[in-house]
Image (tube, rainbow, N blue to C red; front, side, top):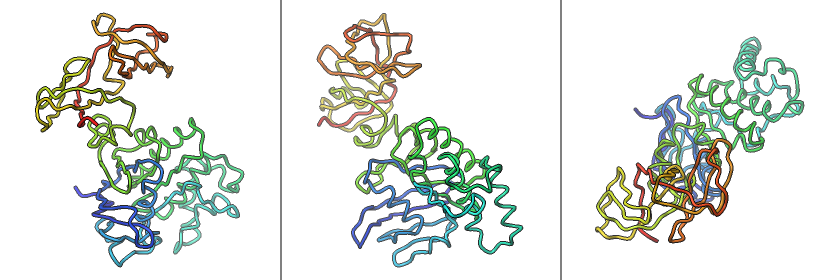
Length: 348
């Protein structure tokens, strides 16, 4: 099934100089997708190009089959049926909450505007503050006003540009989940930009990792974590270490932790030097194991403790233990490998 939002072979930039090159992806109708990458990678440029604020140098952007942007053609932002929530909310300080939400409702009668505003105030849980000005609201409330304003014209697509970055961590998580629940219930196709991996994994069902203006992988959060297509993604997503080894068969590697097998075959010659990605959940505590490591650092995370463990060779791996297994720096602990996914790269 083709997506409601389709980006095909897109190149875009400023003053004719490309920032993005050969970007292709689609977001299914009603889906929530995320563009993730380091600062300066081009993700905000991509969002602005989808919104119509930047022209394309190559390729095209379509919404529900209609061309929004192509070479030499850019449909005006207000004609695209796309809503946008900006990083700073961009609310109008001289208007009330109701006035902000109603701002984009052109061509409707006053009664129709009131009905839309009342419905959206109830949807975002702000039906008791409609007469207030935005400076009287908390950051989380302002975020929901910005969402209501974006939803008011019934857009086909909503774009969110780092919308929760100004909120503190606890509020950021709660408001993020609340906003995406509202979007999912209204079946609005959504594209979110963030540099926050936890937020991307919690909110999106598709994630695109961008680096240096190129889309490296467009996939589910699960596959990005367990099946990264690129060493940058393996390093950028989640936590993990690279353990040196030797390719034993197409789908197994000899390492100092024993033979690691997985669900992926590699075409390198047998005996090639490789590096295997190991996540903290690949190394499990096992007091009966003959394999031991020394605790060199620990980070308490509530239900779990993240340990940095030094192996006999001096290499370090990460492991998540249940927090009741409380080990101190310098202690020796038993471990075993439980890696179902073999993710290997040519040794650097």
